[in-house]
Image (tube, rainbow, N blue to C red):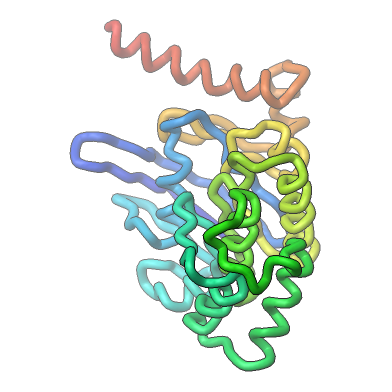
Length: 249
């Protein structure tokens, strides 16, 4: 389980995140939804231990990343917004290298890579250099690399961004497989269709704050809207309007 409690993050004179609290339980997919500039990536970086919060706390299966970073990292698989694959290496070499950094090796590591490549439909590409891969193929390799150590919790920052329909379908299936295996999955997205199709729970952010939490049906019922997209616009526009009113005063 991933837990965030009253997270604040301030960069010099700008408050990027203010009093954000939520949980992403095991065996569930939790979506972090918000417009550009809402603070989603900053929150994911704080949860991942990449950025220290100004205030508040994070727990990864009860482990605080600031107090025990190595143990927390071992429990996390992270796909950041920057993919960072080594273009001259093959898909297998990229994933193997990260597995070795996580202390894996030998036949067990090779079996794990084969399992992931089968789940992500990467088998035919395993021994090709990633330099010539499509965006969707590179994304799949990056996801395999992120979870090669079989972490209990997985964080995905906009994993379907810019992908074609077939790649999105493949990734959806893989994310559901992570849930079926009891993993806590937390991912951010701008795509309402992806969030509605995948998520058991949704955290809606706007202007650095959480404005609503719940299932798709709960958010629709709360706003009286027929779709998640309309509910999202209603929830986030209220925050934007209040900010504009504050500026005009």
